Length: 237
View 1 (cartoon, rainbow, N blue to C red):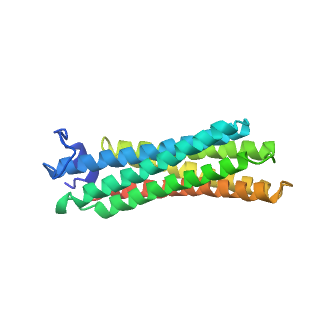
View 2 (tube, rainbow, N blue to C red):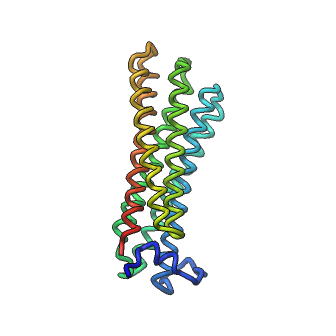
């Protein structure tokens, strides 16, 4: 019977006592790499949450909180990139035993790109916060709704990856939620973008708002890609 990549992880009975290399077994290598992927997606989920909070604080007029949020977001992006480097190192030192390292590498790259998108949105929110012009209330509420939907999408992605080691079949079911939420984000983005374009705000706020919408929508797209990558791993040898 075919034993999938992550089912092999679940079969690992011995804890990893040493985080160094070489690994004592194929199963410990897989278990360590899965743990690193889970750490990586946790940083991405936290970045999604920070971006949503930054927008909420912008709408509330808390400029200092927005700036602190940007600093936190930058730190989370750096941590996500470090998690990617650490996982790639683990893959490089795992020897010929892992057949799915290309799929894992693609997942890592997608997760880091998500973190970059949230950081991009954060910079634009901070820039918007420094301006005197205020975003129209209905547009602000739309983006609040959209940032919440993107956060939910990131949460479902994290759930998908955390479920891999316990129940690969369940992970596939959870993955479907990512696609549903991504479609919702797309719809919110189209409606919000039209409102921004047809508003009578100044050029600078319009450009910043469109960038924010782009980065949030891009993050949701990447979440769906990452969920697809995770699903491929389920069926890997």
